[in-house]
Every structure is written in C-alpha cells, then in structure tokens.
Length: 292
Image (cartoon, rainbow, N blue to C red; front, top):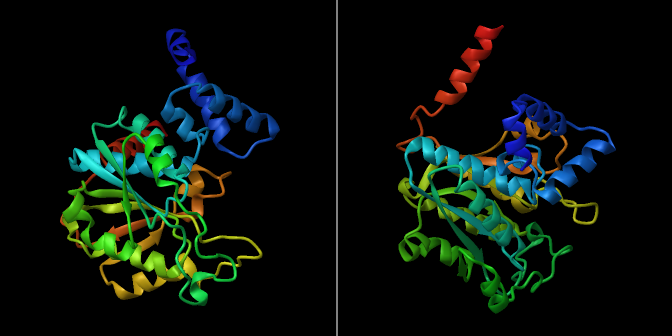
C-alpha cells in the first residue's frame, strides 16, 4: 500500500532517502522506525533487507547475493545449506527469505539442513570448547520440525559422512550459500570437506556465515580454536580454494553485529570464476562518473 502510494505520487526518491537514512547508525527514532517497518512489512522485501528490517538479515543478504550471482551466471537452481540446525529456527527463517528472493530472481532455491539430530557430540579436545559446550546440547525434535518446515530437506547423521554422499544422494543444485553453526572446530572441519566435491556442485564464489567466531567472556573464542581455526587450517591446506573475509558488508550495514561473520568461499580454478558478472555495477559507476 505504501509503496504503490509513493509511486503514484511520484515521490519514490523520498522513500529512497528515508531508506538510506535508516541504513546508518542513528538515534532511537531510527531504531523505532526500523522496528515499525519490520513489524508492518512496509515497503518491499528488498527495501526491508537493505535496512536490515527483517529477521536474520545476515541470512537474507547471503541468500540474496547467492541468487543474484546465480542469475548472472545462468544457473536456474542453487542450494542453500545450514550446518547445525538445532531446533530449526534458522531453517524456518531461511525458508521465509527464500520465498521472497525467488520472487526477485529467476532462480529456484533448495534448502538443506545438516545435523546429527541428537545435539552436540562429545568434544574431541580443547579446540571444541568443552568448557562451554556439553554433549547433547541443541538437540532436534525431528518430528515437530518436519511439520513446521515447508521446503527444506533435513540431512541427518555425522556431518563428515553426510558431506561425502550429499551430492550423489540428493542431486542437489550448485551450492551458493552456507550457514555454519556447528560450534566445534572438529565438526566445522568435517563440514568443510563438502568442498572436496567437484566444482560443478558449487558457484565459483559462495557466501558463508560463521555463527561461532565471537562468543562471550566465558566462551572466549580465539583464532586458535573453533570455527576461526577451521577456516585458517582450510586455507593453509588449499592453494586455490580460500575462505576470505567479506570486506563490503560492514559498509552496507554499519550498525549490525554480524557483518564481520560473513565470509566468501573462492574457488579460483572454478570454470566460471573469471566470467564477467559486473555489468550492472559498471553501468552504475560510469553513470556516477558522468554525473560528476
């Protein structure tokens, strides 16, 4: 209603000014306006995502970017994966974002949730934070979750085993986005074995979110443990496959806590890695240069 009204009155630029204002850290009034926009679903989904007025904007932004890249590379389907599902709130949220993003891009998005179904396993050593996690935490009520999920496939079992057989068993579309929430170093290392599969199973660049690289003053995450160590060791072990920090997200969302938890998997030898996909950005840049 609001969007159609503003368009009919020819004041779309005014709406854009408001959205731009809400992107940047502002006083309480901006926070309250964001909450109102989120609660009432004002503006389009894309506009709400731009100002993080959605649940789990980090999930939405990663899926959005993956779908955009897939479109530019000509992929009609992609897969989104969550490692470590617990009660399933992340999967339910991902389904919401996928439903909206499929309206924007001509891409069908498959969702897969990897989990033991039995909660956390026994930690193997200090790198798995036994001082912070207990075996069995975050167990899944499988039967209840299945009734709540609409378009998600649960992949249950030991992650190392399920990664080894995933593409053969499920015929999944190329992976474009991965959310990591396995808590442990050992489990994260097992999840990263998914990249042992052939390049055809992946987009050349994959948006990744790592949930467990911050923690708190009891957890005390460091670069020598957990997901951070897994990322470092993966990079050391691979010359042409790297998991690198995303360097633009903090500028897009300067008031959000999750921006430095977004990484990009690069396969520099992927057959599609060097395909030009920046036509829209280059046109925008050239337009700005001309205007100035």
